[in-house]
Image (cartoon, rainbow, N blue to C red):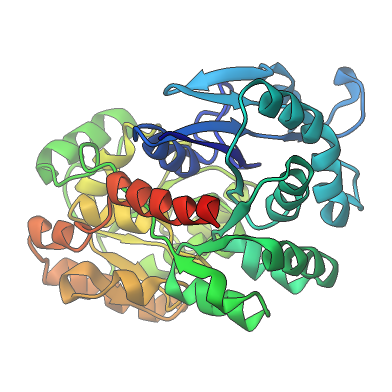
Length: 398
């Protein structure tokens, strides 16, 4: 028997932003590839209620996203909902329901669904709960990190999250550490299942480091020799790239280069910091790195550093390990669930000297890439989908 899932996710790729929420898409595509599940995704897109010409620049590209498209065989609908500046945080679940429920009713009438899920706890969770109730269906909600660590500490959002959690057939968390944080907020611990991320081992695997460095040198003008540290993430304060740049100025880090993959509002400040510390010639801003180049960067690096303020369990942690590249990360989220062997890397305080010491240790005493990659062997999209199918099957069965 094939069960049908209606998945609600504000975080999902679209034709004009193919990298946005790609890990959510890979999960849903893996589930849809199974013979026992059929998946339809609704990806609500928030836009201010303004004419196109007056739309803030950041939102204008979203106007060109089609109402519906197929991504790897999965139908993805992109209804628009209103973003109201200053009010949207607490109103977003209701605004999403208003935009999505007519579409959900129509799709359900055409081919009935068996359950609804939300791929982000807020605002998706409360919205999915209301849609599922309107359709008379059970539902599940997944937590990924910032939805708990940010929205879970805002009283109005937490009230809505708690109400949605009480009626859910299952709650999922990307790490045990995040599951503990959910329970600490008062979300029902008995309903929480740890559901680790997946990984495409065909794409992320060890490669000859010299060949990867040659590609990076040709494409991005990164030196082909000498230690290279990768840092992958949006250029925003909570990701901690400033700490990584400061670590380059610490004793023992002479000759080490840093490759920053990502874009964001902090780029100008980070460039200025690198100049101020006289390490600008060793800091390489790569911009938004295409997914095909991500494994090349990771395989070419001696280590990956991501000094984030908070994470659930970052997909880039697992991808780097699978490429044979050890990690230097803080003791946050699921870090200790990933760094379970010495070859996987080091936990370091969010402080430049500590980061520099950890990086220097990994560079001076490298582990074999195959030993590092073995630390990520348990993560796969097939395992991810199998566990999701099992949990969701129980939700449908009641």
